Image (cartoon, rainbow, N blue to C red; front, side, top):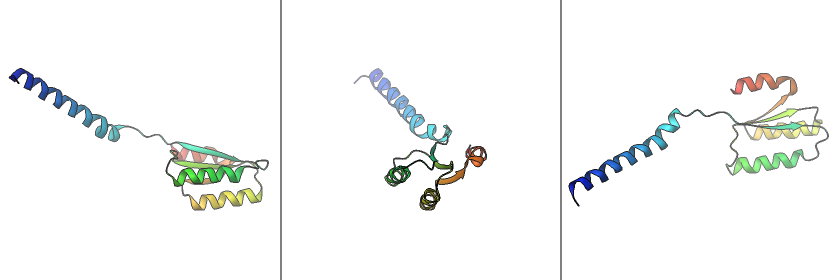
Amino acid sequence: MKTPEMIAIIVVAVIATAELICLFIFSKHTGKSYPLCTVIPVLAADTELSERLEYLSSIIEDGSLIADTILLIDYGGSAEQIQLCSEFCDRYHSAELITVQDIEANLKNMI
């Protein structure tokens, strides 16, 4: 190979390496990560709450849930539903059972 071709290959390799470093390393340090939240309303008429919580459990355990927080909001749920939600929150620390009055304060704390 001739000298100009070698210089061109080296320059392209250096530029490609610099781009990869910027793309994979520096972008993770400078990029903002915004919190994602999953909200489940707890209503007395909801007959599928246990199935919803089982589904959330399965995606939490296999690591495919991208939300940072799971909010279970009590909109007048039955005592049985509240107990089920409390057990879910005890098992998963990212889950929290709150009342309607606590929504604004809780969301401000997440940001």
